[in-house]
Length: 312
Image (cartoon, rainbow, N blue to C red; front, side):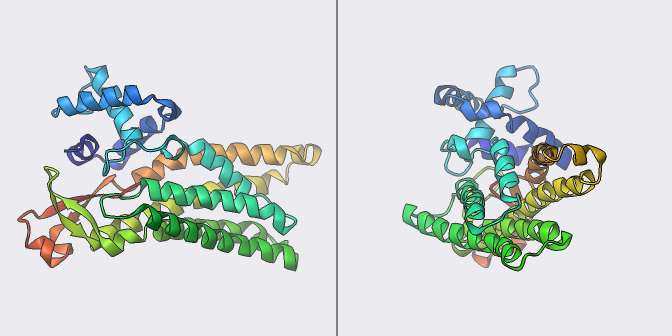
C-alpha cells in the first residue's frame, strides 16, 4: 500500500491532531528537499510497514513521514512539484493581498487577478485526486478554461467599481471579499470537475481498490471547495476589518503608508493560521459508508466503510 494512504487510514485523528500534523507538514523547508532525501525517506517507510507517526523514539521515522506526506501525491506516488506543494502558503498570502488591492483602471487589476486564479487552478489540479484516468491535454484545456472564467468573474465587481465610481464600504470591501470566497470554491469545483464525472478510487482498509465512485468524487470535491471558501474568505475578510478600524486612528492620519504594511502583515498572519485550519477541517483520506455508493461497488465488497483520497 502507498505509505501516505496507509498513514491517513490508520491514524484516525481528531481536528486538533490533524491541525498539529499540518503545522509540521507546512514547514517551508519541505519546499527545498532534495529528491535523494525524499527517496530515502520513502524507502524507509516502504521497508517498515508497521512504522507509525507515534514512534517518538525513532526520529528517522518521524522525519520520513514528514517528508513523504508533504512532498508525495498519495494517488500517483509521484513527487508534487515544489511550487505547488502545500507548504507554499507564503506565496498564496502575497497573491491574495495583491488581488484585494484597490484599483484605478482595468490594466492594473488584470495581472493580480489572473495570477491568483492561475496559481489556484494549477494547485487544485496538481493536488486533486489523481486516481482516475485523464490525459494531459484534458487537464490543460480544463485548466485554461477555468483560469479564464475565474479571472473574468473576479474582474467583474472590480470593473463595476471603476466604471460606476462605487465607493461605499459594501461595494469596496464586503462584496469583493464575498465574491473572492465564492470564486475560490467554484475554482475547486471547476478545476476538479472530472472527478465527479469519471469517479475516483474507493478502497478498503487494506488499500485494496474496490472500484471507481462518482459519489465519492463529488464528496471529495465538495469538501475541498468548502474548506477553500473558509480559507480565502476568512483570510481576506479579517485584514479588511482591521484596516477599517485602523483608518480611524491617529497613527494612520500621520502615517497613511502604514495601512498597506498592516494589511500585508495581517494577511500573512491570518493566512498562516487558516491554511492548516482549512486543510484539517476534513480528513485527507475521507471515509464514506458503502451504502452511500453505487450499487456495483456495494455488490463488490462486504465492507461497510470505504476510503478515498479527498485531495488538498
